[in-house]
Image (cartoon, rainbow, N blue to C red; front, top):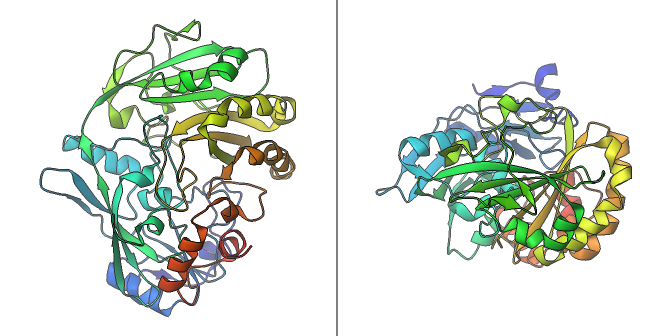
Length: 419
């Protein structure tokens, strides 16, 4: 009933950017949790896709591919509103809108509101803010369907919870999640253009701590570094590194200004300011590739210096690069596990071969500084899990919950379960 047979349309499923074509012969769209349980129980290999915003093969499989968009929507606020429980197919923008209607909020959001809650936290996705950990930190419970079709819930405080949220799709099918909420709040965005290289290289920590959430944007070439987006809950600085805020809004990733959330000091609710892009418009650029490397925050200045030396090589293929910070996460496979983190994100033109040649050069510069690659983006590193001290614990939980490896695939075997 919710399952498509093998066909050209289902077998040819592609990801959001169009750079990955899934290998599955069947696409499953269960319309109830009971139907989902039956399909999982029969599967020999199965992977779940959300908004298809991963740029690598983490969600690929030669078995069955499953999406959760046909499941009934769920939105349950606890008494007092401190917790919300949602279905795994819900997108962050939809959740944010409904929370705002109830006077509640999430502490942070990623730049795109179009991505699903379950898929985002499973790969360690984050926003920005010195005191704000990745999105996974807001999750207090995860409801899974295991390979045998049974329900299994992991809650904050359980022995295995460190594996549950940033789960890489390796434990089971997430059907519902519970998240902490806070009272709604207002945010303003201000953009400071023309930051000097010296100001960023020598003062990146001060810059990143200048507002509730800060993003630095650059193309790693030219006489000036680029610009800073400050998302403030109080009055922002009158000047930032010697420059004043723009009086007009700007676009991002060669996109129209109308697609971005309002800037120029306009106050608005958190759901309309924390993301960079608006839910009602096509996100970002679409036809692009993305990479990201996350380092201990104390190495931010040195990373800026090293990346600047690669600017001329990157420039023809780079749309934009973003620098963000986050507080430490306690999810074992989170790129921010155990440390304050700075992330260096790269949005590339869709030039697969050229980007593939650049990534080893970036990693040669960043890996000695303790970089971890984002789980959903392109990287050249051969065994990504080697950078995670809690990898043995994660493997143990995965083997126990999925002993036959139903939810494994080539990507997970290479980066998590081997090496």
